[in-house]
Amino acid sequence: MTAEKSPVRRAVIPAAGLGTRFLPATKAVPKEMLTVVDRPAIQWVVEEAAGAGLDDMLIVTSPAKKAVEDHFDRAPELEAVLEAKARHDLLDAVRHPTGIARFHFTRQGAPLGLGHAVSVARHHVGDETFAVLLPDELLADGGRALSRMIAVAADTGSAVVALREVPRDQISSYGCAVPAGAVSADGVVELAGLVEKPPVDEAPSQLAVMGRYVLPPVVFDRLDVTPPGRGGEIQLTDALATLVDGPGLVGVVVASGSYDAGQRLDWLRANVELALADPDGGGEVAAMVAAALDRARPTPDPRPGGAR
Ligand code: G1P
Image (cartoon, rainbow, N blue to C red; front, top):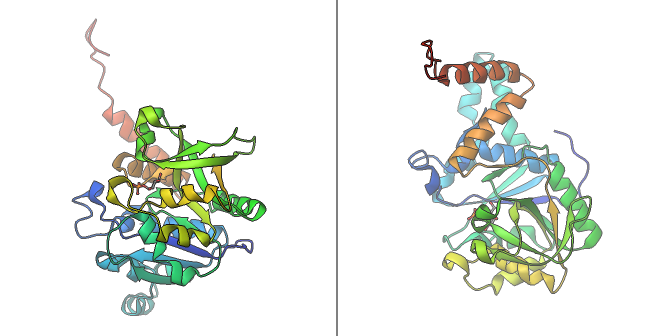
């Protein structure tokens, strides 16, 4: 994948969560390794970051996530077998993930929340602006939205969060933006704050934080003094809200579709839509889906007045 040189190089991908929403599938398999079309969900996220020009990925894991580390490492025994069988197509597919970027892994240590997971990246990130990508969200846009966020961060010097308008009854599942003004024609909005998972009747807007962030390194200082918030966890949202006093906080409303791959139905939608969009085979998938819908439709009752 080629990408323009980006002023932001490092991506932090928190992947230490338990994946309880997908049990029993995630009993022995990390949720980030569940397949979306032809590759694990986390590979889509890494490819998105690489598409935005990021070439250094720090994945924050827990002891149960060895498969994630193995996926981005070489597999000498498997490669030797494929080489001996001259399966060059498969060999390329097996080697591809390793070459997408430079990979680093660190452990979260204790499940203290998303803010804590990001804070353990401090050592690796140092004094640079960096991106955070939550692997539950799939964008599959080749990094377009993230590139735009990086450009807005470079222009404004502010922290930038991706936003998506959601139905009011869903806002309490997300971080919620407090807009300081109107959303511009190109989808940029200055924020006066963020609230983590507010009750619907207290939500300041329907703009949900959607798992992509471009952050200045000062966020690490803020995370260090962020007390536990919603759910008793150290919330990234709470630390970001404090950036209003400082570098500032800007939202970029993401127009392209995204999938919440941490939700069963949306994970299924990601599989269907991304398979349909695949240039090699999308047509076959469309025919398969049409046939499945036909079979699922109730057969009309041929009797006069029968059910249709
Ligand atoms: C996290 C964030 C939340 C954000 C969401 C996006 O919540 O805390 O602000 O809106 O990701 O997916 P989680 O889904 O991990 O509970």
